[in-house]
Length: 351
Image 1 (cartoon, rainbow, N blue to C red):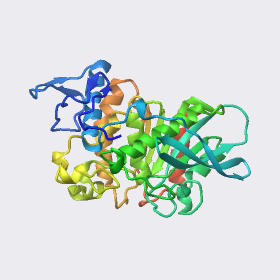
Image 2: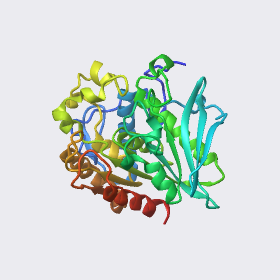
Image 3: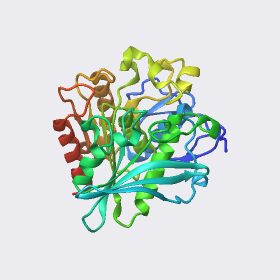
């Protein structure tokens, strides 16, 4: 099924088929523009809901439309492997996430009884190992966060990103405008699966990721409000401060090709930016873990995003739920940095 770019979807009361206003200053979040370019201040949650709908529309202008519920199918879970890991059991599964597409995942289940919080664990770039990085099957040990969190009592799920690990899927031949949107859909289906489990508390679901997984954690939080806590490590910065404003890294077929073909790799031509994406997460808990020596994502660009989102969190009475950690580290996820991240998840999902 191929979607038209003009597919009508209702998001926050606004149809995706209607062209949203453009916002020249995408770090000034508490203003609402109309079709003439007139701006009015946002003073309440209702006003913010309208601006948020514009942001989601503009993100979909780049990523393609979010599929509707008509794309959902029964999971038809295939169990491939099972391994006793001491305090938890590691399951390797295949989930049917849409017609003619099965997603390989690992699910780690603590042996303790009762309903548990759950975390979607999104792996960094790894064509060889994919989801295996998050569960300790290959990759650097500081990226094994699905294991670490299972040991802390969370049910964790780690899916492959399209065309990494064991998962092959041509998003473009299957009607998607970007691989990013296909990944968002798969990750939302992971939440559907978690909620279907009797041992998961569907009101306590989070997401965590490093690098590739870091921005995909944000994207999942943007489009799925069932996610109550989002942690992004080395995952993003504002577009003008990404590689000195050259957005080529975001524009290949593994991400969003329209950034190249329609928006000329230029931040000023983009209809959305990460300050807006972070703000859409409000009033839910969000931690930006941004090492000061990250060579991929400029820490000053992360600080710009936090500064832009802060007034929105304050407006919604959730200023304490927006956090940032700027450790003296590079593009990695060392133990002391993970400790901050895991305690942030505990605060949001266990208390």
